[in-house]
Length: 472
Ligand code: MV4
Image (cartoon, rainbow, N blue to C red; front, side, top):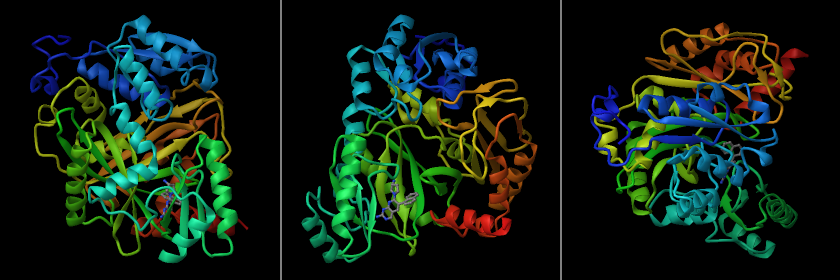
């Protein structure tokens, strides 16, 4: 047992732990590595950081109990280098690996290597990750279980002729998607017979080049969807719970910028109904650990499943703010074999309204990356404000990695209070030396349509073209 019996942590007081981890390797960098280290510290578990040569002076290295350099700056030579990550885990003699998000988090082969080495991968079993990674199979699985989905092709469509026949039967517009895709790559919207063959073949070659797999499937296309996702937790004993939804429609080029919970468009009845279906479905397919189920909401307010993410997500803090559930600690306890009923001992309810702004190191209008040294850094604080970041004054943002440098998350009693709290927190968030998206977020918070809750996934296109007009 890793824990003293007089452990002060209430999570542990309620727990009936049989083999809690003593040491976890955090296979990530930046704010999420630090977030996982926080969870380890609160659970009394030792955290081991890995870092590239570019991250020697990072906060995840500073705050971990041990740190191991795993290679040069480039991702393929460091954080994505499975033998290097596993070697570090073996040297540090860890019980488990937390992959964070991105990087190796949805790599089923990596999870299998962990398993083969006797290291617990903190996430779902590799078979489940692999199933959800094949979007067409994920779709078929959800359909079979009664999760609402859009009209779509039954299985892979292998020729333009077959695609044409299907498109005519449901009517244009339709969308072709790469089964191995996600995040918008290998997708084409098709609006007529004439343009179908070219767009179909373009999607096929793009998918083959990007994923080494040209399999395509099709769906009826929704013109102005909202992107709404449900957070779930599942233990290793068949128990699943839904923690409600996040609204993620404010995005640009498939990169989310602002997320919030609850969604202004999800009624308590809809939340209950979808949550109930997800609990049944995920339990019956043997889902485990944290997961996110993505839906598109159509103009009528109906939700349709599109994909499932088998990792902790960037925006998980929005759900943590409204539910008071620590999702990362829950992930660790679940992976250690703990039952959900011992992790979450009271009825979970969502209270108030939370909003997250992703602060990126990039130019707020041109969206070009902005690496370099932060000269001045002031964090906002005060009631209802949370900042997840690994950035600091005099710290250097290296050019090799994702541009996310901080997540500013606020909670208010209602959406209006959350928006004014976010605005004042953005005003008090000072970063000099590099460009950031803070000025962009300040303008989004003042937008009349955003404030009215009147938006969809096309919001940023309209917002940015208006901003350009106004500058003329
Ligand atoms: C769609 C769609 C409209 N209709 N599927 C984009 C990324 C991938 N995860 C799914 N995506 C979409 N699928 C149908 N049938 C519109 C999108 C889409 C989108 C979805 C979520 C968030 C932002 C988006 C931006 C453009 C297109």
